[in-house]
Image (cartoon, rainbow, N blue to C red; front, side, top):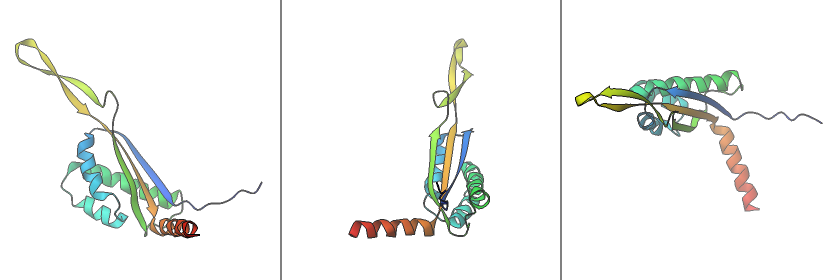
Length: 137
């Protein structure tokens, strides 16, 4: 059997148990989705939301994975997919908050899992054009 060598077109990075609610991170993720890596990093650097720092660090990790592990050119990378999901423990960890007359209430300390995928723009365009040619036959 001959081993086929395929060129990788995607790189991933994951962040688990981020101590921030998913809604706060989704706000930033929606702004970045589909943009080129250069544009996304510039946007994240100057966004005055705390979640932007977390996603910027994760995006830099995905770009480093693409460059070092998959030998991809970083110039034509874009954010293909970014997902923000709730973390463990019923989507939050519980802490007690003292209330009046000896009662207690729960504080919800939410966590998030974030995964990001960067891909080569040129490779995606090639796949699309091949699929279109195959469909037109």
